[in-house]
Structure formats: structure tokens, C-alpha cells
Length: 626
Image 1 (cartoon, rainbow, N blue to C red):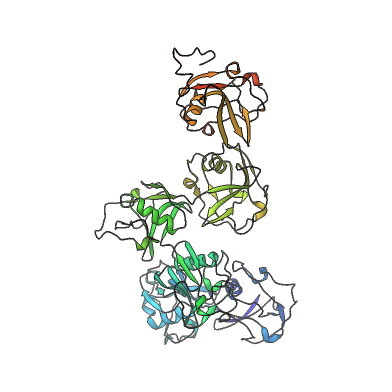
Image 2: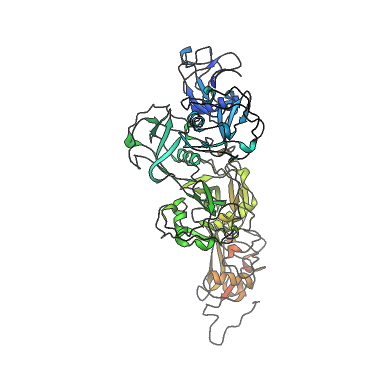
């Protein structure tokens, strides 16, 4: 690509032979161009030959925003278009950037030739800050910070003093001093905090409210047409406000005023800021303010587990802090689970159950009543608590962290899906192994042990979003919420790779042909079919588990078919390797199902202590027992 630059504004040519048509040209496409050129953030996407005209190579470009080159974006065949030269596209990229903070805060770096240089705190003032924040679409300056507040940079330090008047649209338009300055080091790198380019208004906190976007120095609203949780998530991420809780429409937080800047917003997971999401175009809409979009983000998050389980962290100012286990109770847990859309609390876990971190521990005690909608509405104690360490970081598991199997012949086989914010998401086969299957089958679903993990959408292709993190179970977790997940998103999976799972099966048990329900021939229902159990390896430990499961006390005797007669139909598992203290036969290892080595002459029987046979006057004579 050959680019012609005029003070940070770019009219670009593809392979030196032509330009891009302005049809559907938006900030996602502009972001790719700026990234490819190493030119910082995309500031504006321009059409109608704002920078002049030339031959056209591309039309209807559709970038996701994550591509490294413009040529990698989707578009019709090269050179095919329905444009004329008055529709050439343009881009304005920033000549400044902020590093190591958020999008609108960080160390100030200025593009100098082909390199990014830091700026000395002695050479940067409020007027310079005004220009940088404006150029990045980040509102107005909040604070200028010296002494490498956002870390020490590397490489060159800008050697001239910026002398902005404060009214310039870009840093490159600012005058510079003519004398070189060599007495600055990276210990003096300047940092800047701007007021952001998106805000949430009238929601009671900076993490909830009506969505407003700053464009060309003016705040405006966003129309709720097609506004959904994906768009919500981008806003929450841009503001550093935790998880998206709800995407609201119909001016839920009241009608705004001024321009409606965005309509038909279509964000994907790759965008870091709302401005980079596809939309109808700046100021193009068929809306009115009673349709202003709203967002609720969480000010609490769960870390180190899965979405609905982990270490509790609360947003305090601009930082996430942990909570002491002695200052967190069931009422606090109710609010956290509710705020995250994760159902109700299952377990509060102390002693850093989800790992220790560094940084601040929340110094006040939460005193939630349990009915608050968000954690920041809870009262706090007035006295500070300083005697807690990260060894006491509290963890929480909520009920919303669930799995199910879909599309199989019964409830214990099918496509693996995870519940995420009231939506069931399939799991990629590359991110699911035998240890994950052990936990899903044995503990999450009560479906025995895993028989087979199946890839390539064996139980059909799902639709919509996929679960984007890798499960990292050890296989011995008592609940799925105790499994770790990968911290990195995995976007390279499709529904052709939806993972499926076959578990050994959910069983019911009964005792047949005895004097009552606590004595008789052992029969198990597996895959909706009743069958008997072979007595070759059926022992008192397995019988004790069965009696307890049936609420029949403990086992008194294990008997053969000569006591309770021969059954009919299938003969199910022939080895239950129980310890005797399990609560259900499914918790015992099973050799396999549907064994044919036995006949019904070997059907096992049991007498439990709750049976009338066990308490018969004078007792009963038991032959064949253990």
C-alpha cells in the first residue's frame, strides 16, 4: 500500500493503483487502515472524496475491525463497483496515542516519522492536553500526570516543546519550539486522563445509564434499533465497567437531547470502542429520543473461575479490589449473583479459593440487605478494616453456571452447551477434553461417567454465539464452577466444531418382587429401559449405597435370584466399585453397561434394614449374604 499523508490525514491508494469507494465505509474499516499504517486510533471515516478523487479499486468494504490489512477485509471482486470518483473514501488517523491506561487515558506518545516518541512532562501543559483528548475523540482533559505515572516508555523522547493553543484539531497542527531539549528521560514521561468518548447518563453511576457518544465535540445519543448485549459489552469494556448486565431500549433512563449520532449499531466481539462498531453512519438515523439506548454494566466481577464463579472483585474508583471473606455474607452474595445475571448463590468460599492477587483489598464491610439490584447500592460500614490480606480473598459460586446436553436421544447425551447470561452457548470441540467431560457427566448432570467426547457437530450445529473460553477442568472438581477457564478469548471456532458428549446415563433404581419397596430384585433404569444387575460383583458396599439412595436404611443382605426370582429384559452393569459412602449409585465407578456375560439366573437381590423382612420376628435366615 502507498499512502499519501497530509498532517495525519490520509487519502490512501491500494497497490498504488486506485482508491476505495465510500459505500458502507465506516469506522471499522478506518480502524484497519490506521492500524496497517501504524497511525494510532481511527478518528474519522470520511466519504464524498473529502481528500480528492482517483480510480476506484474496492467497493462495499466490510471489515470486522480485527484485520491487519485492508485487503483482508471482505469486499466484492477487485475493481468491481457501482461508484464514481466523487465517492472516494478518506480516513483521519491520530498522530497521538495513550498507552497503558484505557483508550482515553495513558502515557502520551506522538508519532514522529515512523516511530512513537514519549513526551516530557515539563513540555506538556493543559492546552496540549486539550488537543490530544480532542484528537482521540475523548472529550476534555481530566488530569495531566507527570513522573511516568503510566510507566516508563522505551525508545525516543520527543525533543521539542509542544506549544499548542488548545484549539487545534490534531497534535501535528500545534507549533513546536525551535530549540531541542535533551534533559528529559523516561522517568519524566507525561501521562493524561481524558473524559472518554462514551458515557452513561442518568443511571445513578458511571456504569449504568443512557448511552451518549462524543462526536466532533458534541455529545449525542444512540438509537435502540438492533441494540443488543454485544453492543452493551463493548460499551462496558470501553468504560472499564465489568460485565454487561442488560441492554435497554425505549429511553429506559430518560430521553436525551441533541443529535442522535448512531443507529443500527452492530458490534462484534473484536471492537474495543463503540465508535468502531458498524452503524448507519454518523448522524444518520430514523429515530427519536424516546428510543435512546441504555446500558447497565456491573461494578462487580468474578475472576479466576468461570463467568458465574470466581474471586469477588469490586470496582473502586478506577481500580478493581478484592473483598475480605469475613466481610461478605449470604446477602452480599445474593446481590452479586443477581447483578451478574447468574441466578442465586450456591456457595460462598473463603481463604482465597480462587487464588491470591496483588493490589488493594476493599477496606469497608458490605452490608447488603439482599434485595439490591447492584452492589454499589448496598450500604457500607463507616469503619475501615485493615486486618485482611489476599489470603482472605472471598470467592463465590452462583447457580447460573450450568451445562446441558442438547440434540441427543436422551438427557445424558448431546451437544454441550453452557448457560451465559440467559443464553445457551455451544462449546468448541478443541476446547473440551476428557477431564471437562468427567465433571459435566458425573457432577453437573448426574449422568454417570463419560463414554465418548464427539467433535465436528456430531449432535447438530447450533446457531448464534459460541462460548469463547476454554474449560480447564482437572476432572475431580465437585462442581463445574470450580473449573478454571482460559483468560484469552478464542474466536476461531465455528458451529461445525460444536462438541458433543455421551455419558453413561442417568439411572433410577428399584427393588422388585420383595415383601416391600426395601427388599427385592435390584433393577436399574438406564436410557429409559429397566433391567437387572448381575450378582457376580454386586456386594454389600454397593447394596449399602442403593439402600441409602432408596431411603431404606442400610443393607442387611445381598442375595441371588433364588430369593426374588429372575427378571426379564436387559442385564445392566455387572460391576459397581462402590466404597459404601456414596449418596447415589452413579457416584460409584461402573465397569460398563449392558453386559451379556450374565444370565437372569444371576440377578442380584437386596434386603435393606428398612424392610419388614429384616425386622421379622425371630429374624430371617439369609443364605448367600456377605
